[in-house]
Image (cartoon, rainbow, N blue to C red; front, side, top):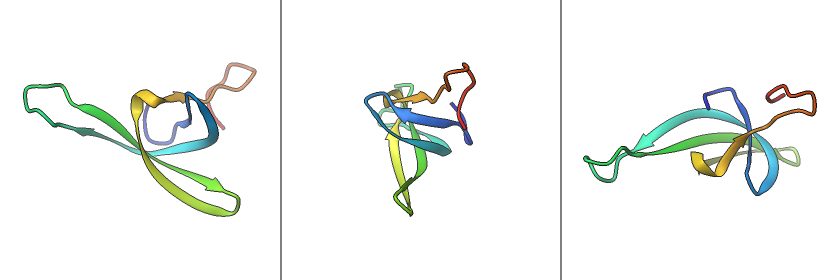
Length: 68
């Protein structure tokens, strides 16, 4: 997953575009957890949310292509 990818929550919901990825280190000895800052529309309003990357999946079209 990278900036520009189109994703969805694994549980469903709107298509979102990944704006950036960041790693949060709670414990310096642990590998860290990835978060995706995502943008999406709710009606005509642009929204931004940061979501744990493991809750997201790439949006794949019926033709097997990713996103858009």
